[in-house]
Image 1 (cartoon, rainbow, N blue to C red):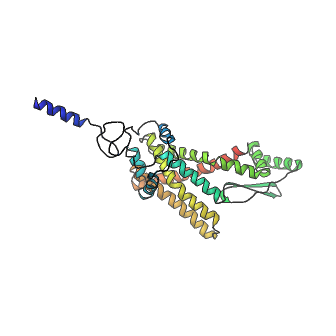
Image 2: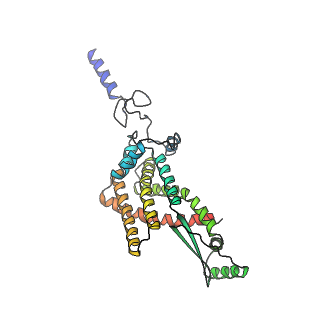
Image 3: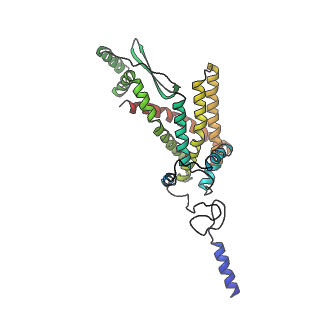
Length: 304
């Protein structure tokens, strides 16, 4: 009898569910020790949205803690959150959305044009320059006569440009301010696409990791990346730097981004230094090409 009771007790103790965050025994839907929900994080990625909708912009003390740990323990916040120890961290979508809104607000307040359309008139017709993150300024629209428009179209077609590119160039020349405004307004959505591209790239490089974990990693990575990128952009735009200083700042920014990805990759995926460095180079090239393509896409959409 005693042996049977002892066996039953041992079996019950063996099957007691514990909190993924603090290890305490669970007796309900929430941990009595730390308050974390017993709900498993390893579920469809869309469920992260529902975690965020409840008090999306409510400030809590975890936000500063999360940001601090993102910089002092790169990759570890996402790893712990994905593994269930998430009570002390701000959910990734909430943190990303707040940081991205602050990023674009800082660009606006500091007078940075996210997409800049500059025009000039040359002997061959209107010239258009499309750049990113430029100082505030008003581009003068170019007023073309019918003869000038026709001549420009003929020359552009002779150079092999499609009608879509020609129409885009004409609209940008005649309405540069409108193109800038619409492009910048869509930049926030474009940044979300960059996060999606980042997820896909990491999924290709780490195919055995669950999609939900890639999503968590990408959101936390961008939440840490945007404040640094924003500060560097504002410094580069607002401070009149010599050419050598500007080149040095760009080189330092590229080196910083590659180093940051290495650290986040090692912290989250547990990669070796060699593997993290090789992946960071692939990510850097693919991410930069995607950013340029999205910038052109923003201008194209704005011109429609």
